[in-house]
Image (cartoon, rainbow, N blue to C red; front, side):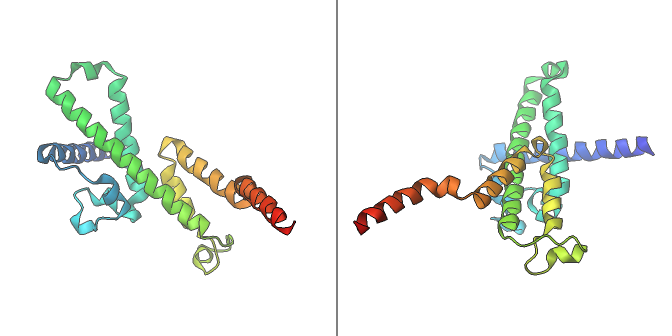
Length: 196
């Protein structure tokens, strides 16, 4: 059973690599830059997207994050092995073009996920852990969606980008005087001058 699962995962990884490689080659041959960021963020309608729905549909975020992590691991392993030196120039070029598309897609997906997390968190509300339905009630913070986004973001540098954004949101919302203190004190001194 474990061997079968490993074979299935390897087969899926190979198909995903070929899909990215094919897309990268099409982009290079057409000389038309693929609008990765716009497609992943949903700016371009899904019917007009050239990328696989795995990366463009928000409901596939966790699976897409896992796939991109596996693809980045393949890219990284080439740099750490002697096999990279054995590739002929054409194969090496194809590999490099594909790895750049994987990197662009990773950056776009991580950005979309962090922005989605921020929108939900900034929307505010209270946590309701009483039931899964409690998360979707009005005035409640949708912790289920936040959890799903955090799980997907853990596949990007261990969630470092999410951690940085979360700390930034908490600090700016809990301690606004740290960011507005200088402007407020300038305004206060101007008002004091007006009263004199």
